[in-house]
Each structure stands twice: as C-alpha cells, then as structure tokens.
Length: 588
Image (cartoon, rainbow, N blue to C red; front, side):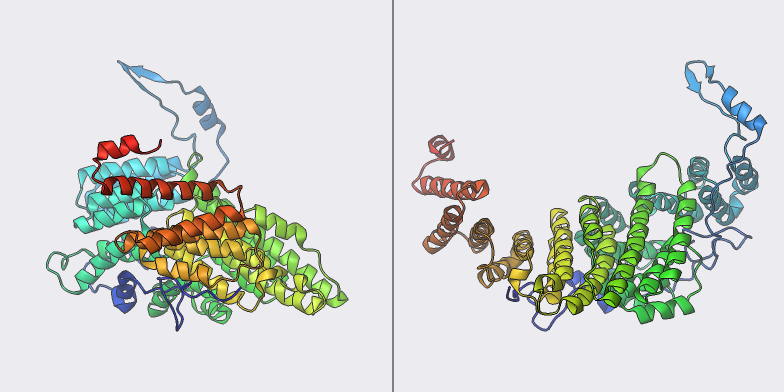
C-alpha cells in the first residue's frame, strides 16, 4: 500500500515534516512551559506513598518502606471473639460489632492513631500515620472514616485532604478522589476539569488543566493566589490526560525537562521509546524504592539485553511484590485490583517473551524456522477489554511491538528471499495488534489518538508490500472512520482513501471503503453549507458502487437509503411543504 498522506496525528505524539494534522492549542501551551514549577512559600504536598517516622514525616522527601503482606497469624482468643460476636440491637437501629483483635493490624492502628487524632495540632503527622497504616496493614475501612471525621472537625486542614485523597487514589477510586478535591478546590475551573476527567473527556480535561496553568503563569488575579497543592493537581491532571490520550512523546519532553522530580515517568517514557541506554542510566542514578513497576522495567531491559537469567529473577521479584500489594488491598474492590491484574498479565507476557527468545536463539544456531504460533495466537486472544483505558493497552502493545520487531529481524535472516511470507510474519502480527489498539481508541471516542497510532505503524510498515499485510484494510478503515469523528480532518480522510491502493483487497473490503467514501463526501458537503448537484451525484455514485461490489452489505444499503430519504425530505421542504406535510408524505 502506498503511504497515505494526512495520516499524522494532531497531537505532538507524531511529528514529521509533511504533517497534515495541526497541533492543538492546548498541547502548544504545555510544551511552551506549562509545567513550570510554582515557587510558593507554603509547604509541599505530601506524596501518596509517604511513610511516617517523626513529626517531619509528611514532607515530600520521605521514603516508603516496601510493601508487605499483613500478618495472617491470629490468636485463638481473638478468633473465638470474632466467631462468637453477635449483633446487638439498640432501640430500632441494628449495629454490628466485632472484636478489635480479630483482624491483623487493627490494635496497632488504634494505638498509633489515638494520640494523633485526639489533637488537631499534629494534623500533618496524624494524616501521614493514618495513610501509612491503612496501606501497610489493610486498614482502609478504619483509616478513611477517621480521616472523614477529622475533616468534619477541621475542614480547613490540608493534611486531612492530602491523606484522604491519596487513599482514594491508591484504591483506584477516581470518583472519591475527585469528590475530595471538589470539596477542597479553591477555583471553579479546577472542579470543571475534574468533572471532565470523570466523564472520560480527556482532551477537554487536558485543555482545561492547561488553561488554568497558563492563566496562573500569566498572573491573572483570580488564579494568582492558587495554593501549591492545587497547582500540583493541575500538573498531575495534565500528565494523566496525556497518558490517556497516548501522548508519550509529549510526556517524554516534560520528564526530560524535570528529570529530578519525575524519574519514574522518565523511565516509563524511555522504555516505550526504546531508549534503553537512557533507561539503564536512570537505573544507576535514581535511588527508588523497590516496587513492582520498577522490577518490570528492569525485566524489560534485561530481556532486551539478552540476559534471560537476570530477567527471570527480576520478574519473580516483581511478582512477589505485586502479590504482597494485593494482600494489602481490601478484599471487595474491583477498581483497586485492576492495575495489579494488568501488571500480572504483563509479567506473564515477559515470561513468554523470554521463552520466545530461547526458541529464536536455538533456531538461529540450528538454522531452522522456530515454531512461535502457539504464543502468538495466545497473544492475539489475550487482550485487554475494549472499555479499559488506553494506558493499559499501550503498556501491552508497546512491549509486543518490541518483540515483533525482534521476531521479524530473526525470521527475515532465516527465510531470506525464498519465503517472503515468513519474513513479514512479525510485521503482520505488529500491524494486527496496533490496528486493534487504534480501533479501541476510536471506539472510546479518542480519534486523535487513533490517527496517531495508525501514523506510527505506517512508518514501520512503509517498506512492506500491501499484499503481504492482510490488515492493511483495517488500518485504512480505522484512519478514515476516525476522520469522520473530527470534522476538521474530513479532507485528509478522503484523500487517504483516494490515494490508497485497493487492488489487492477483497471485494467486500473495497465495498466498505466505497461506503466510507460516501460518508466522508456527505459530511464534507454538510460542513461546507449544503449539498450541491455535483455532491449529490458523487455521494450517490459512491454508495451505488459499494452495493454493486458487494450486494450482501446491509450497511451500504442502509446508508444509500438514508441518503435518498434525506434528499426526498429536502425536496419536499423546498417546494413549500410544512414540516407536518413533509413527515406525512415521507416514506416510513
């Protein structure tokens, strides 16, 4: 297939000299310095993973102890109390009481938090204590009510808000986190951005956060006295929105601009951009606490370097840390476990990647073609759900693309020119996976992310003949249909269809492309002010060609019928008929 112009995304995640998609104003503001730090005299916000040690525990420099599972040993007396506990009825209300010693860590929690919660003068320390004990001892159900009670008694103390918001964030409760900040936020613009983020309108939320930051930097009087925690919320909101919109090049620029404050983000951007040298340098320079995400990044680097024994050790360590974190979470909460479930799938695929590397190395030594079909078929069938957000898909697809590129290099040397289908096996798998990723982005109403994903895979497969890539039709369809969701890019979508080489495609596929061409022509005519006689002829011809190529195409027949029904109603309305007469005269 020829290279299709107009396939570049409007986001800066794909840049080229002949990019047809302009960069949105919000992203220009971000790259122009939207992330500049506020130099405020107030104390810094407490990070979500701060550990209490002394009165100064709530500062941003506090380190966290490693996760560990709660103690499972229980005293026989405590177990007897738990099993013998009965509900006590007081008047018309029923309260359920159990022993304080029946769950691990509860006695320690109450002993540690009693002096902290009794005096509001030590809110910084007590908030960090509650937050730490809730995470380390699975005492979320005790710490959160205590924090809410403390907020009711002292609604102006920022430490309680910090602790409660961090607990909601650790549990994956986005609505709870937004509710805390809507109560705390000083400006209505912040509450609006949070609401947009809750509804999944990521592009609008990113624009709202960036606008707030730009107005604050410009010294606008209404925002000049914004507290430091709210400024940090704007910055975190822009980063979350960029991840949800798949703007990793933009995130990489931001992380490089602030390397000391964002080492974890810089590591994540480095491996996704295949900058392995920078990733190894970050491992040496950054002293980060042991966590599952760090072990996964170390496993990525070890597999890329071919150190399979080291990769296996890092992978096992990461699984153990993730299991310990699983045990520290509440038993009934889907959102809190979702991230760990996605992480376990990535660890599983890392183990399968190591197995594939062993088979590829053996095949190269013996000059034989390896059998990778079982793992590749499993990867096709084991994908995230279509409603899961793009960061979960991106983590999986990015690593698979690294493996597919390595597979294609090895098979290209083994197959040579005698078996071109085998030489492009890695490209076919890469194209299928990325097109599926783009389809999910389009279904989630993120057309700019869809176009950006398609543009990247187009640069990878540019030198491969179209007839060797069976998913080239799917790539073209996703690109054209995403342009239908963006009225400003209708011409680019139509140009991509007109310049595509469709000779190698099957007849039903060509019919669907003609139907999509008719939709684009109709949308362009509506955007320009109405259908002319020439536009009507072009749209009708496109739909007629679609149904003539493939008569068993319900969508093509429906689009053609709706087009003529619209033309009929417009004709009746132009002849002076009222709306009631038009509806009565129109076919059912």
